[in-house]
Amino acid sequence: MAEAAAKKKSKNIVSMFVVGARDGWNIGINSLMPNVLFAFAIIKILQVTGLMAILGRIFAPVMALWGLPGEAIMVNVTALLSMGGAMGVCAGLLSSGVINGHDATILLPAVFVCGGQIQNLGRILGTAEVNPRFYGLLYSLTFVNAVIAMTVMATVLKVTGH
Image 1 (spheres, rainbow, N blue to C red):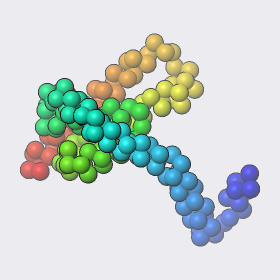
Image 2: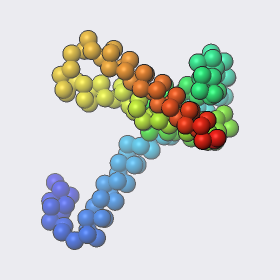
Image 3: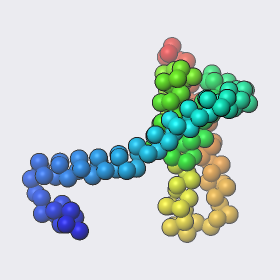
Image 4: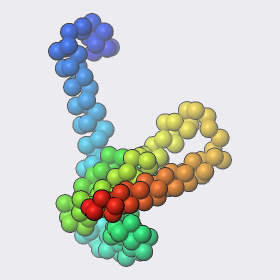
């Protein structure tokens, strides 16, 4: 309450900046950072147990459509849960050498269009009282959008010679 009152009272730009920076810090530390750390831990667990290699082999034919290694599917799967988590998975795969910058460039647009669909189920679809029978259609559109986004990005990279 006191912080909300302080926001209303503060008229100078320095105070507004400080309040905004504090709010941004809290969002980053309390919302984004746990997702990113969890994603790094998941990637490490999958690598240590050998499950990453198995998943890579299973999904290699699908991800090869965009010139990506099979393990890259983990970025897309995680994006359904959390955009921050997907960024963490992407960073984890990058740091471990499974994917490179070119691969990440193809994957990231799909992350943005998938961005936390499971979270949206409760936050948006539930509150907007969308009929649950349409959830499947809405999620299917997410997958279609992700495929289109990756295809467009892969094509742009190919055309530009990157």
